[in-house]
Image (cartoon, rainbow, N blue to C red; front, side):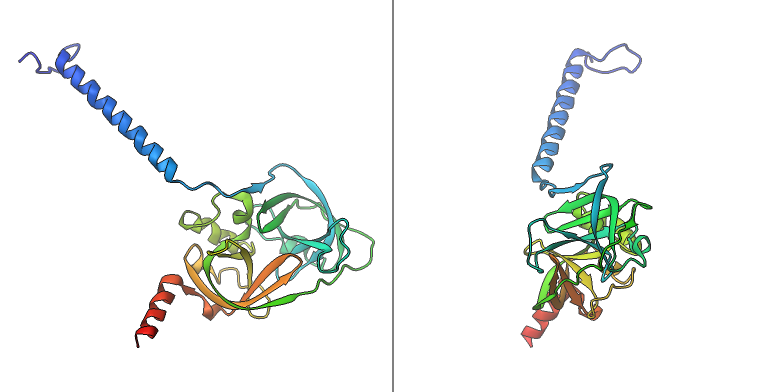
Length: 260
């Protein structure tokens, strides 16, 4: 009866108190161990950067299609193919840059913006009102190379978050954010699951998809077939919308065909 706890007494019996302390200590150690295991199993974040609050000045030529971009001359390069870097352009928040650069196709401009970059791609978030046209000759027309027809598995993401604004900027946890970014005009990317290479997605004619056209495939394992092009250091995957398939469904279809 000495170990029976009575709620109105100032403290529990010594044996019961020691037992409770041991249980609480064991549960605490277990919680710490589980947290460490989860931390060890978490993959490292991608090496991506958003230079938030750090405005830089850029000089270059505006290119409107398929998505707004800035052609920036590389110092020391003379080859027409390698002479320019091509940076995708976006506006603040979940908005593309179409409205900010409308009517400036082929014009030399100077603008301020924040860099967003990751291996495989660089982007500039334009500061609204900072674009000034320069009194110079029309900009260059970069050559485009066709690299062949490919069938790839991967994931559709919004380029702004993936390249550095969010980390991770892909996967199920980022689905809703990516869908809203694409609806706002952010260029879509297809991430090749085997190589990790980001590819700008367009329709078969190299034109942008409708802003909500890809919503149902965002953050889903997806199989796609299309033609691959390269221009100014950016690779573009031109696809027919009907070629998009969720990877699990595509695998089941292939297995069924092989069994027949």
